[in-house]
Amino acid sequence: MLADQYFLISHEDRSGRTRVHPRAIGLGLAAGLVAELTLLGRVRVCDGEVAVVNRATPGDALAHSILELFVAQPQHRELHTWLAYLAQDAAVKVGERLLRSGAVESVVRRRLMGSSQTFYMPVNADQRNGAAWAAARLANLLVDPDRMDIADKMLASLMLATGLTRRVLADFPVHRRGITHLYTIAESLPDDLRTLIEHTQASVGSVLAAGRR
Image (cartoon, rainbow, N blue to C red; front, side, top):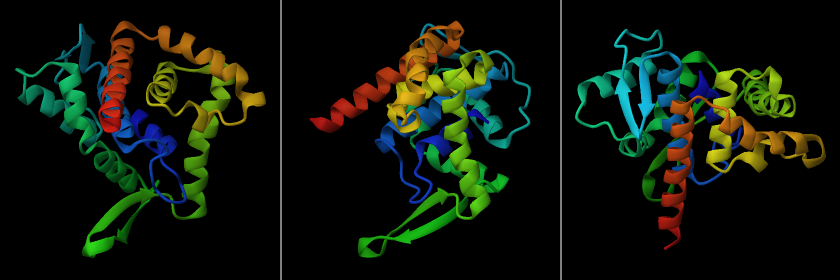
């Protein structure tokens, strides 16, 4: 699933922490969940709004629950509102989906004052290899974008929109072509997915700017 791949790419495999600001990653995951429903033909994004076009139950439980939210709240259609809402717990929901698939484990760490925080992270060798492969696969595809399908292009565009480019394309001599392809890939997306990327990028810019004030 697209949001699962984004989660693995956007989190450190050794610490479970986000590679860039957590609020940016939350928005990226929210956009990934909306994109999954778009690719399944359940919702459309047009003129900054989300519309349900097919209520058929998706096979994935998380995708089903997100679709049910859209169906239950038809009065709320603004994309930026949905991104902000879904971003609040997208990391937990996607982390739990990865946990159910066996791709990660839940690791609870104690903090000061007796509180705790749960991280969803690869623990054993197979899980760590899978997490590392998510970023390596995307980097390799970006060097040769003709092999990318629409989900890969959306994943790469989410990486760009949330500031993860240098985290994935870290080997500049090898990945230089991938960096030059990124903007072309984002522009080549279908209208609804391109709109989703544009709103995600704008939302990330807004929350990061607010955090600096």
